[in-house]
Length: 527
Image: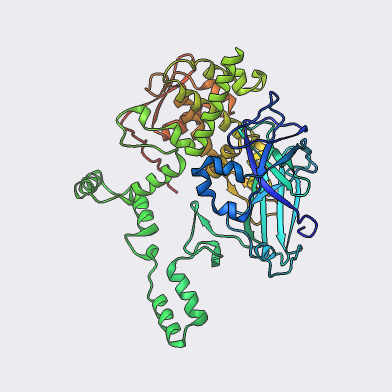
């Protein structure tokens, strides 16, 4: 409101390691001397007003301190620090993709202000909880939306807090106002209403947009659409002739599904000698077997990242690669912070990290209790075990119905009660978004459920491996905690390249050997 506050300026400050209260004070200082109080909650400062001539000669003043002191005209400024008030604290937002043109036009002096160009709403993230806020903006034409959320954690440990300072030139006062949600900057994500981008394998198709058939369009399909819409009749005939001469790869004998189905159906009729000759010929010539390629792609989609050329068992599967750099960094921060706190207060490290033991799976209590955090080299195992604990929490939440409802991924992450970065990563790996139904959310198919169980078993072996041999004497208690049958767990581990055996006492143990060898594919029943 420039007409009302012409004599005021709004300044954005960050105070590091500063404790402020609602008290106020005024003081006068200069560049050569400063005054400080024993009470850190009272802050004072000074603003120096110079004439235009003095501001121009600033470089010469720095070289001659005596002349600078003569020209300075200090003015005492009174600093007022307000208390936190969630109902009236200012909300700080940012536009990572640039300020919208409608807001930019409002800020220009040659345009007429239109406060209805974009309307913003500030509300709770969940109606049943007081934590977490959401900012939603919608332009006047209802074309673009601007959304941002804050999880509203009790304490995030940041050293910098954001405040808004209002400078009153007439009264010579600074009013320091703490911003909402502990100084959170709401980064508004711009989206177009009713626009659904086609995302394939985590990336946009060529040009993005809504392709016919629900898939991303390639370059040739876009050229065809352009010619149909704007091309001449001659060009359209050329494109139609080109499309008529195109051959589907699946219709060619020896390629596509025809070849794979033919090999599978004739596998029983080929003699052993011919099979050996075909295998040896393929190895000698270096040609790739289509079945082996398809099988390896299926394994890559089901298993965690692995190195099939590793020369040691502990190098085949890596918990840090499974988690990803962002999730691993977040887990490391939590584990290090809890460890330092438990050392300082002399409390139980396991309970501080996992919570009350009554609500923690017994296998996780046994596992983390067996890891000495003070021993060198155990930091990796400890962080892998904590990441496993978070995946188990996600598994217990989604395994009840195999889906979680929510308008956004933030809503689903809040339901799982996981750190935001970790929750987003787990939804990305183990679920797919529900589309076309009455409810929004994320669902886990049968294949994704097996993938989640495979990740859990491999992470448990990694965290339990103290000798870097990837061996575990018993997985029975862990399978009981994740409600997985022992025989099904053994089958999944064998598919991941593990050797699984059952002891005389009924314990299922597993071990991984290098180089990695997968079991042969199972042949389906002959119809």
